[in-house]
Length: 75
Image (cartoon, rainbow, N blue to C red; front, side, top):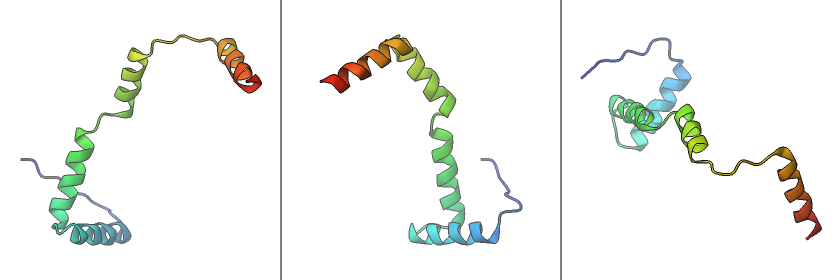
């Protein structure tokens, strides 16, 4: 398992992380590890956007959208 050092963390941030760790009944190390593992497991914004674009089936022009908006306003 790797070791990660964090330098130049503000006292305010460190204090808040310690408070949150205590609320979760975790050590600061365990809390930080949980946060980092959750972040690493989450898909990046770029991959989410790419997946949405791959799945998008509708190809509408600006005019098509404006027409639908106008139609919706009339109804």
